[in-house]
Amino acid sequence: MSETGAAGPRTLVIGIDALSGDVLSRLSRGTVPTIESILASGASGPLESQLPPWTPSAWPSIYTGVNPGKHGVYGFLRFDGYDWDVVNSTDVRERTLWDLCSAQGLTSVVVNVPVTHPPSSFEGALIPGYIAPEDPECHPSGLLEEVRDAIGEYRLYNRQLREGASKDERVDGYEELIGMRGKAFRYLLDREDPEFAFVQFQQSDTVFHEFPDGDAPDRVYAAIDAEVEATIKAFPPKTVVIVSDHGIGPCSGYEVRPNVLLRDRGYVETTTDGEKPSWSKISTERLRTGDTGEVASPDDSSLAIRALAAAANVGITSQRIEAVLRRLRLDGLVLRVVPPDLAAAAEETVDFPDSTAYLRDRIELGLRLNLEGREPDGTVSPDEYRDVRAELIETFESLQTPESEPVFDGVIPREEVFHGPYIEEAPDIILVPREFEHTLSASLREDTFGSPREPWTHKRHGIIGVAGSDVESETIEGAHLFDVAPTVLATLGVPVSDRMDGTVLPIVEPPGTESYPPYRGETVATDDADVETRLADIGYLE
Image (tube, rainbow, N blue to C red; front, side):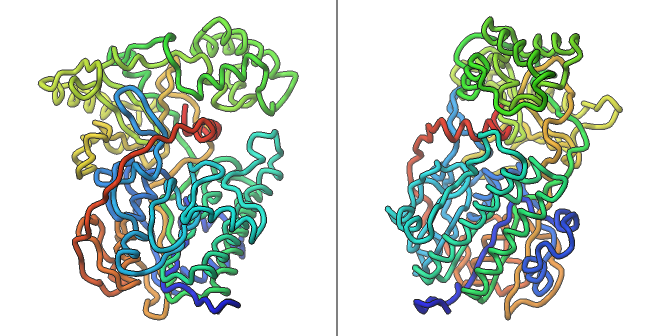
């Protein structure tokens, strides 16, 4: 019990992005003793993620218990015709765990959970997480200032990311952020004395995208483990749940560019005119002004940077730049000497109004058809829709790598993956890379296949662990991402929403179901250039 008399929460959920059994096996022995103890003392096992297995869609599925067709978020972007915006919490159109707890008179504390900005009103406190602004609105109003006064600095993002910092400095920054999460969380546990508490750590994913080798993963995971240990000691919960949204592992295949194949087959028209997404404008401006960030080798990089800058000034497309660099034997150098968003500057892009189908956002893993009546200048009539979609499915089902291996485990109509009131907002065709060894890219280059830009990529299985006095030590089998929310509610004795797609795992007693009032709220714009740039810097926006 704390100095103020606050006891531990009845249920503590610890979200660790990208954690999996494979990740644990790669860490040095003794790196995460607290996490391993929780997993060993209770019920644990693999957790199958959803499609797509990425942060902006998967965490909302975890905390609502429904598939994207019901909550409405498929990736980092929301599309309105050919326009777009970065998603936020108002795009998650289903009631959250803390909202359902509030409806039953329970108080919650939520810290750093992705896609929770701007926060809604409920009984408790919330500091938003990933893709929120650096100084986000919190619940209740003024909470962030209070937390900073109490614990010192609190930031959402690593300030070292765009200052030319070394690897060690970047990892230092991640350790700082993890410490801030833990301090803020414990401050709010003491302040609120909640029945339900949920904290999420994001750097466990980021470190593998950036520095999968060496001691960086050990440092990040050790920092997370230390915060978990401090929290459990200070506020011992009755039940603790560890959950991840997906796994992560080496990217052993290719970067696959569906828009190149679609262009070559006549489905995609291209343009170098018109309004570009904001990250492309930022990239081009940075090229022209020479603001290129850290470079690997000044001598080798100068020619590449000058070539890119000159090309950007006269509108030469990135495919032509790529060909020039290849002739100069500098192909591949660009990705080493400038950030990925700079390599996309002055890029030839998909002409959405004139195209038949395209990949808009690689994170949502899907092709969208330019459907008449749904899109402003649709080229596919409703009568043609099923035939065109069937042609595209056949085209991508038959796609093979240069080694004559299938590229996809599944090329699936959206209604076989999603269901719910927002299925019309989903991509029309879902592309499932073979064993997730390949990554997708919406960019246009010369070839359909290229070298992956990231050493690691997301995998389909994460992990779940549930420990407590009422939970037997056993292996959980067949758990799915959608089962997390109903299982958490069961540990609290809160009735499960009858709209949830998951079921209570058999390790806890089902509490029954209830028909809660549906979500009510209006979607608001994000319109935050810093959020867009941040996503572009780490390769999530192209």
